[in-house]
Length: 539
Image (cartoon, rainbow, N blue to C red):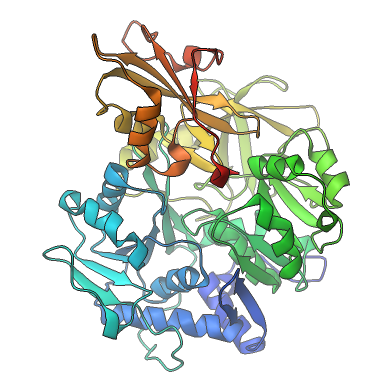
């Protein structure tokens, strides 16, 4: 893959992320690469040194090669250095969403089988709350605490450890081995659709392929700076970091997207490019116009999923828009033609190195114009997930008939452009997060008075989904939606909280007693539907 500037991003070992960072550190050690909003910055050399420091520290802790280490960290430069350090040590990061709490947090940690959790002091109470449910954890590494201030253990059998000295510059690295394309880069948890969350095992070849296709790197250069308000537990929080290292540009880390912060921070940090998920694009368009919209360095934006108002976004903000379709298990099978938006809402066309089909329920290909599930194959080895962590049955099911099944339905036109239609399964996507309806339902059921519950997607005015609960009450016991909502705040991540709650007499089921969620999704929002007060933080 040759870029407009002659750079070669083809799949090869020297472009594996830790190795590439080492090369950048040798070539331009003092060039600033990563900056944190309101926080520190790192040159290439400083970031590489930080990664090595963490790698040496994990080896000193006795972390074995291919051992899984859980990280429970917000977006930060330090979180990225820890990921790279684990790779140099030969270990595997399982990056957990900091929104996890209660049973979901315990389930995912148990699934990793990690004995070590790397986190900050802020998240210790969350872990202590589920200590009795954890089967493997025995050490917490607190990266915001040094050895002098390490607290006593809040749980019998747990050791509390300080973080590594990321400012050190001399390490024993002779035992480090070069990562290979087939080695696991990390495990990222993606929501199940009707079952528990699954850990997606991502090889370095897949991460490289994602980094060079999730944004048009062939049309970018060292002057580009990416604004990233995405957590390191998501592929977006890692692949765009990779993209900017490939082009030799800059990377700006933001813990969480806030509409009011966007333009001032883009200007302050000189950001030229970013990803706007559909809801974020709507939030910006819904703001009153401001001078910063035009007087800023931003000129290239990935919008995914692409919104109907994409041409308005281009005109109003003076940007070029591209798009991409991706899943954690894949590496961007559908992409736009560089920074050229077709203006008709497609997800682009099939990129080089990938084969796709649209198929019916029996995996038979459907004709042009008809709706089918997108199934995918990658040409090069190790460029898609090797499976779900310790879930061979789920891995086989997702890859049945030697095609990866996305669970998403599309149609394609006569020009081979692909248009997203719907999610085939019962996942809900809100604010860029995939939500398992089963996990939402599990947290609702313990509330007094709930006899049956179904969680479904409701249409959002911001282009994605809202969570809607359909509830049947126990005889003689009333469920107050506002009280249920408050109850759920202590049991689930904020992005999982329902916006709508309906109390009904019965829930439709099939003859085999499966809930017919396709019918529930069609129920209109009515005067009897309870709606949660809108949360400023979500906008």
